[in-house]
Image (cartoon, rainbow, N blue to C red):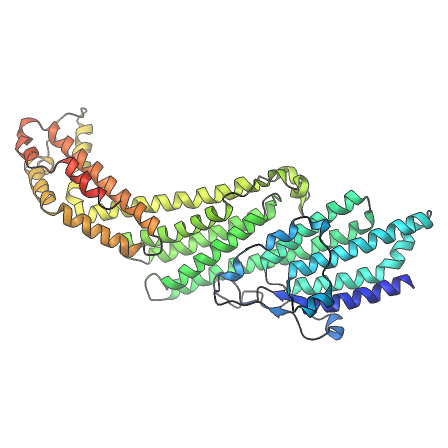
Length: 480
């Protein structure tokens, strides 16, 4: 009788919860492009709940920004004080027209189940000492099976990696709660929840990986150079937000399997951006494109992880997760920092490439002269040795100095305008690139003057016509 009553109550509760669920993501919510190689349908979507659900199916949460579905926002706060939060009360929520994300429904259902099972387990342990375990499962098994079926359907129809990862973490914390209560009756059930959610999370992350490969295949077969820049920018935004959300949720969890998936996704994203950049001409445009995308990813990660407490102190043994060996997992906070450092390095290397390309365009003769003269001096065995080649002699230097004196201000203005056009999406990034170009220009010019000084008296007339370094520095300060 007690088992039938509990079964009836859980059936009614779950049917109401189904109508309170708000799904953040659909099968079409991928970073890249859909294709026949992406899992679009929910696996095992038919269940007993379709026959007794009150009303329609779960509500879809949509916004005008396609990137919004990949943002974490405050969804992770559901894990705060998990054992102290009460389950959702359906009739109150329905009267207030409230909707809840998938992970909130999962938490509420499991909270109600844990509380019910804890009280029932304590009762049967006191009154049925010898065969209390058999009595407990005889009472609770029908309700547990209904909940298993509900979770399988909910997970199978979920295309939201953020919801799935939160559910994994909630389930892990529920395991810890039951351990603290010293109530082992749900050990197998909670392990089963892990085995249901983790494979689905892997499928959804694989979908994201495949969607990026679909974009790469489309761009490689298109005739337009560089593909659709607007589409690629949106893809970079989606990737940045999803990457941040999953890295943030892995803080304190240190799940190696998830980190591996994120590294695989990162590699695919890099290949997509590099493949698209190779189709762009000139090289400076390609470098600027990559700087824009990498700086976006870095800024999203830095802003999202700034001020976040290191996860090393949280849920110390949660790293065992689904893999079982938490001791082998790396710190999730350091993983996030390594991700930032990696994209920072890529950004810096492409800024350096862009700088050299711009200086070669506007001051190429001076740059080539400095490099060639210094190389010849080193080959002769003395830094002060005068170059023997006429290409690096006083006459060639005099012509370069005249050209530089005539056009250096105009060239700096043109460089400033080009940087402003190429880095429209990030004012700070553009300022950094312009500063790097002007700083490198000043260094090249200083080296050029030093080469002239090493030529001795023959270069005195050229030095007299040279632009003073303070004059160049004064002009550079105008762009800071």
